[in-house]
Each structure stands twice: as structure tokens, then as C-alpha cells.
Amino acid sequence: MERYLDHQFYENVNSPKWREELRASLGFCHEHAWLGVNQRLGDALGYSIIYRDLINSILNHWAEDGGPARNKSASVMDLLSPRKRCPVCEKRDHATHTYLSVLIEGMESPEMIQALRTSEGLCLPHLRLALEHTKNGPVREQLTTIHREKLVSLRTELEEFIRKNDYQAIKEGFGREGDAWLRAIGMIVGSRKGK
Image (tube, rainbow, N blue to C red; front, side):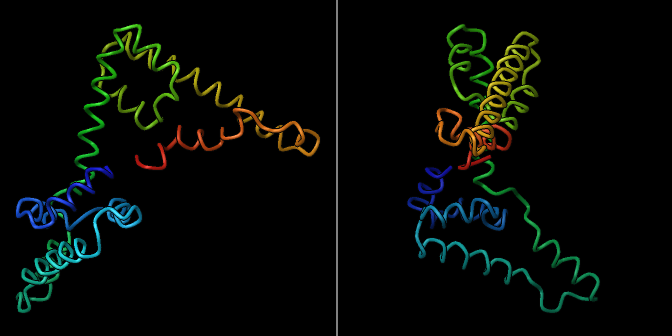
């Protein structure tokens, strides 16, 4: 998503098509607007151009004399409600669907199963999506078996991390379990860089 945002700011700040998408979504969602700012994707000029355009669009449609107060309030509510989702969210969801489709199709091969076994696995939100997108019983069983094993292993590492934080074991030092708490967060909610 960072590459997508960076590309859009570099290539499409003045693109009428992209600007229309942004008007329909009222810009980026909270997460992706601040991702762009925090990761310095684009620059202040690009953000200024985009957000001036959004504010102009809102103000141009904001009727000063919109009739009775009740109707005016309803039209303002419509005006302040996005008609489309954040374009970065759309791109992310499309990419996620594509990657999960490839994973699900690949689960027919021993190489994909082995690759999944030796990886960190999917976070639970993506595992849930993968399971929702396949009706293939053996694939669902493989996915659930592999990820249950990963959760059991992660629980063991968390228990060891907790044990080694006891004053009697603190001198033992940490091995793989040293970052188990970060991996557990990532497993439950997804990585830091995204959902």
C-alpha cells in the first residue's frame, strides 16, 4: 500500500480520474491518510493540492440557501458522507483477495503447504478471509491444521517468555521467544504495516 500511495502521489496528484475517486471517497480513510503522512509518501504540495480540491468540492456543493433547516441538514449529511471507500482500502482489499486466491489454489501442491508450514503463517483476519473464500474441504482442513499448530507453538513461546521474565530465570536470556509477544500481536490483528 505504501508503494501504491507513493506512486499515486508521484504520478497522479493532478489526474482527473484519481481526483474524482478521491472526491467520492472524501480522500483517504484515517489509517491511509496518516500512513502517507507518517511514511512521507508524497509531499506537502501533493497533499495540499488534493485536500484543497476536496474542500472546494464540499464547499461548491454546500448550499447556503438549501431550503428548510431539516432538508438543509440532511443534504449536508449526504455531502459529508463518502460515496465510495478509500481508494487505498480498495487497492489493499483487491490485492489481499488476489494473494489469498493464489494461496488457496496453491494448497494443492506439497511445496505450498511446506512453504506455509515454514512461514509465520497468516494472521487471524487473513486466515478467516482465506477460509471464507474456499469451499474446498481438504484445503480448509490444511489451513486450520497448520494455523492451529502455529498458535500452539506461539503459546509455548509466550509461556517461555513469561517464565524468563521471572527474577529466578532472568539470567537465562532470551532465544526465539524474545519477540513472541510481537509475533502474537501480529498473528491476532495483522502486521504493523497493515490489516
